[in-house]
Length: 307
Image 1 (tube, rainbow, N blue to C red):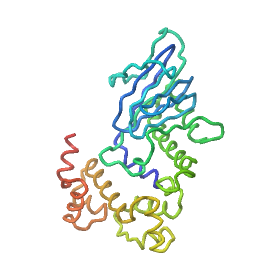
Image 2: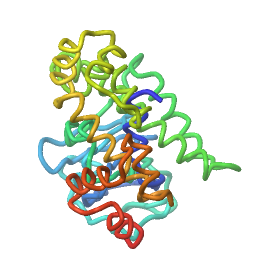
Image 3: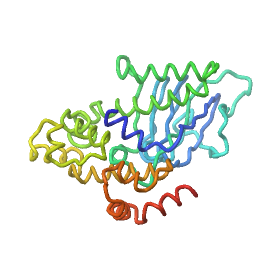
Image 4: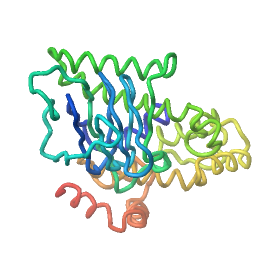
């Protein structure tokens, strides 16, 4: 997989959750903070997004918003409508706001949450703003808006297989949102450094993909530079400038993150996990893991299993 796909895969901790908001008349909901990333896809109508900080944002059909850090916010029919609390126990696929119960909705929004590992957020996720808003503009981000259209069809007319199709489309939506954000002028012009720039840089992106695909390999700065097609010194400078850490520091971070996922999600013995992330000595692996997580691998696995 490419670097962006690998980062999202290691951050994910479960299937995305979603529900359908239908509203008519005057209405307003306050969404509490979530452990993960929250999203809204406007399928029909228009509304106002009310961030915790900053001015209200007008949303219309086809717009996608992502709260990468799970920040609390509000949605309403107007910028000044009072907000009611949206209880965590309102999961259903239909939440009808104030108005005639048999009236056609003014607004249909697909709302939900991506479950992400918040204990050890990836630097790419950490550098995103509190709100990512991708408006529906003609000719912009066609893949993203194709995914929105498919989601709209599945939500409007569920059929056999929809329970599998919708989560798959939501997974694709997250990747399209991140791809659009990191390739957009939001990053390209204003932010010449950071993960957006790293993913656009062929040399650094190649090295990141190599690290992600083969954390067990005995990488050195020189061998990663060879993958990138650069000299050792030139590669180290470029990687550090864009990613924000040295190649070997990021390699260690990725190895420990991968090891934690293997400990939590598999029954592999600790020694096998160590080998999967490039350690021939279980003792050396345990010492490195404890430095990162403040507890040995065995205890970490026990805690994750009990959680």
